[in-house]
Image (cartoon, rainbow, N blue to C red):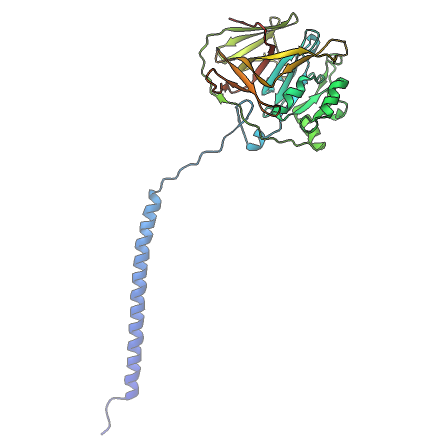
Length: 360
C-alpha cells in the first residue's frame, strides 16, 4: 500500500525550513551588529561632546631690530636698508627718521653730525635728504646685513665700498638714479630723497638678496619708572642734541639747539623709546673725505666700551660688545646680562670716550 506522504514534498519543506532558519540567524546577527554599532555610536558621540576644543595661538612675529609685532614672517625677514641722512641745518627737517628701527648719529665733519638710519620692518615712503657715505658705513652696515643707500662718496670711500660689495651692497645715486629723486623745496645737495621700497626694488633688480635672517636684540614691555627727566648731548654749537622724557608716551622727545626735531614725513616731533649713548674710540681720518676740505671721523665699533641706556625714564650703565665685523652689537649690564630695550625706535648716539653728556 503506497505511503500517504510524498517524498518530494517533504524535501521541499525541509529546504524552506533551512532557508528560514538561516534568514532568522542572519537577521539576529544583523540586529546584534546594529545594537553594538548603535551602542558604540552613542558612546562615540558622548566622547566627542566631552572633548574640549582648544584654540591654537596665532603665530606672532616680531621685528628683530625694534621688537614690535609684525604681520608675517616675511615682513620680519626683510633685509634692512641703511640710509645716510643729512643733519646740517640746511637738511632739516628730515623725512622718515621716525619710521626707522634704529638711528645712529655721529660726528661727520664741519661740526655737523650725520644719521645712519636703519629700516628693517618699518618702511618709509620718503627718506632723506640722502647724503654721501663715510668710513663709518664700513663699520655699521655689515652688522645689520644692510643695503646701503647713499648719494655718493669720496674716491677713498668709494674704493672701500667697491671692494666690499659682497657685504655692503651700495645703492648709490649715480648708479641707481631711478631709486632717488630731488624735491623743489630746498637746494641741492640737501634735497635728494628716496624710499625704502625704491631701494629694495633697485637692489633686487641688481641681483642683491632682499631678505635676511637677523639675530634679534633683547626687548621687553614698557615699565615706566621715571627718574631722569633730560639728556644733553652737545656734539657742537650747531648740533646740540637734547631729549626730554615724556611720561605720557614713555618716550624721549628730541630737540636740536632747543628746537623740537620734527619729521617732515609725519609732522611730529621725533620721540624714540630708547636713547643709547655709546662711547667709542674715535680718531681724525688722515685722508680728507669732504669736498670742503674738512677731515672726517673714524669710529672703532668692534671691541667693547661703556654705554648708557635710557629707557622708561631711567639711566642704565653698562657695556657694549661686538666681536667682529659681521656681529651685532650687544648691550650688557655689570653682571654681563643683556640689557633689554623697549619696543620701538632707538637712537644710538656715538660719542668719543671722553665725551661729557648731561643728565638731569
